[in-house]
Image 1 (tube, one colour):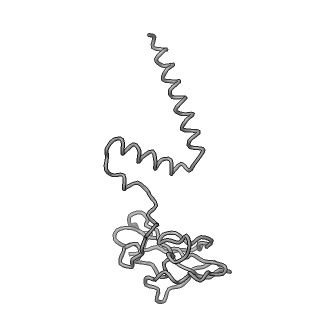
Image 2: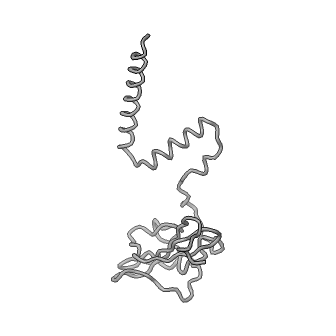
Image 3: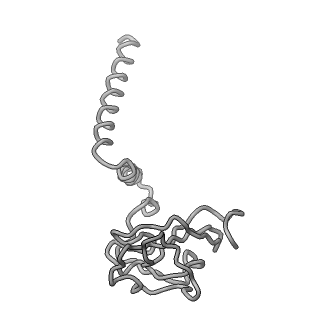
Length: 161
């Protein structure tokens, strides 16, 4: 067997794997593909850290003012509206162009208001955190519905302590 025969086999295998992965990647979101591939590989290897991979934790989620993610929140949770969670605006809402940040528990959190041209009845029904004296940051022509919070990087000087 010549060395070129071995290289030809590797090249054929490489081309086949590339073709399969390219076709698979074009059929769906890459993040979802990478998530499934990562979970599969960890399962095959028997590594028990699968729960650390990104998964949808919105179902059954409850927001709690004592959680560090809400330390700088001034508003209502979005959980009462369809599609709304503690970290995602309700379906059909628009996010504001302005937001605010606060550093709590060693991480920087960003807060954004979710607004509607005509707010549905579910707005302001999800409970609130520190809403006294807060200001809505809705864009012109829209009205406040609720606020979402997203955990960011470890605290740096761009976040308020």
